[in-house]
Image 1 (cartoon, rainbow, N blue to C red):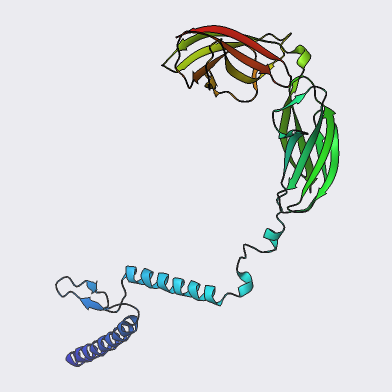
Image 2: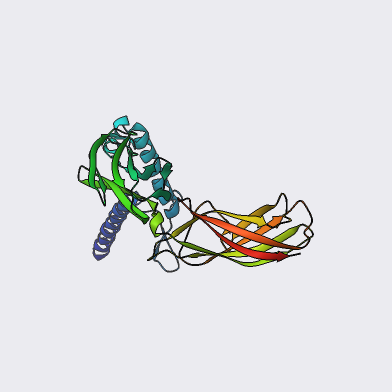
Length: 319
């Protein structure tokens, strides 16, 4: 009887063990749907997890994500509506204006116009104010102001237009320079331009010039050279305007067909008028058509610009 009970217990235990294993197997099979793969190390009895062959590498996953993002962005840009494009010449660019202008001031006399004109004191000088709209917007109420005359005119200028204003004054003695400006305000922006001009006024009664022949030497069979010195002898600080410097030969025997070239030191070639405050040396070189033989009286002459006065200095040439 005892043996029969033992056998029954063994059978029951054996059946229970079989049932538990089938449940574990079912659970394991369910887990394998989420875990890569499970094997048992028979030596240690510990489970060992091996990665499945179809799991992608991390770098490959990142590469695929970047590629998909770029592709989607490109598609979005291509599909974007035309009105989203930026137009650099749109309405905002058209609202930008650039007002600008220039002014040219010139002194005008009967002898011409420009800067540094030589005029007689008391002569009428007309001042020309030439204003041009060089911007890209029409200009209204442009004020042209002379630092001496004050407000000369107020004008309107279309784009690219030029308008002349004028004022007249009398020339004074000496060097004179002044400036003028044109100014306009457009939508709170003020634009201005300026220029200057002037003249040299002659006053014959206050000009004086001393001339001296400092040196004269024969340089060849038919040539000679020399140095004359012109000095300002005007009263006060008035400048002198030298003109018509020439070399002449005075002798009983005479020299024929004498031609001379004259230059200043160190300025170079002598212009028609020279303004100077101190002594100016004048170099000259001359050549005659006949040979030099004997003693000659050489005269140098100079005129004061704007007048009929001629002064003279003489020297001897031994050849």
